[in-house]
Image (cartoon, rainbow, N blue to C red; front, side, top):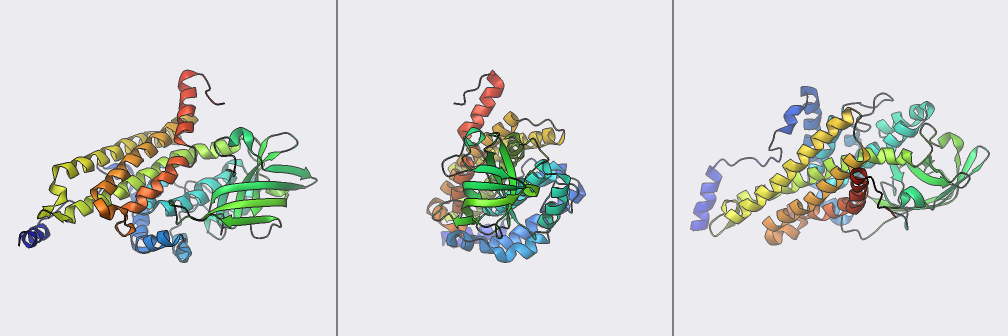
Length: 406
């Protein structure tokens, strides 16, 4: 009887709708930008949310959603011209946050294509390369990936790439392997970074996956995180790439991929904060509805303590992110600032998603309740785009003047 009475009382009570934007950051957007964010939120809730848990369990990507995703017109967001939608860094960031609020893997797919592949061409390509490749990528006729990490080279990519590029006339011969490359098993083009054997400098190449002899991709199996985004191990054996596909608009050194990564490390902060928001909102909804001892667990002091701590982590990350995106807009964001954003937000996310899982108790390990997906996916984001320790060493070098890198 007590449970029935509690259920009836709960149904009659108007409870706050879970909303992790506690400080109302969305109000900082223009009306036009808010409309874009709302469109993305509606899409994620109506199209992606109903299928994403099944895809996560099956380790599959919902490719059937690509036509409708294309209609959002957010591929190439933040890039002006070349058929891209443009938009401010704030809009780019809020869209990433909104996608991750529903699913981090889908946000990773979006970020790899737009933030890494398209931005590599935009920042390091020639005008001719931009005109050729960016419009079809904005239309999602060509989907890209970013191939930097190698099987034996992760944090040491700046000085230790083993993939080589050798020039023969107007052709480059690429040999080597790349690992953990998001979108690689099914996408159309790869931005491959290799070391020129002639001058020992890192250079970027646009490789057409499906038509380049000697180029093969093996899907990485048995992941426990980011299971929806498809990661691959690329093998290149005497791949012949025309010089016209070498990124020639940048510096032709590791500063090119480093410049791209500065933006995406900052972007990962938005992505992981979106994941925190999704985990928190699902946990809060559960706490409002789950009855124990005849009343909602959201009325218990210890549960409210966990929820308050989760929200505080989220607000702290949001504040740091909004300041950093303003610095980016002004062209002032440094590598160290991007690094501290990535390190701080991902470390706080680990706390947030763990507390969300704790609120759900045993149900917290079931994918059906969504929190388990955020809990597992956060572990991957904690490490990718530069580990927590490497980010702190970048910051350490900036504040002390001493490099602690080996």
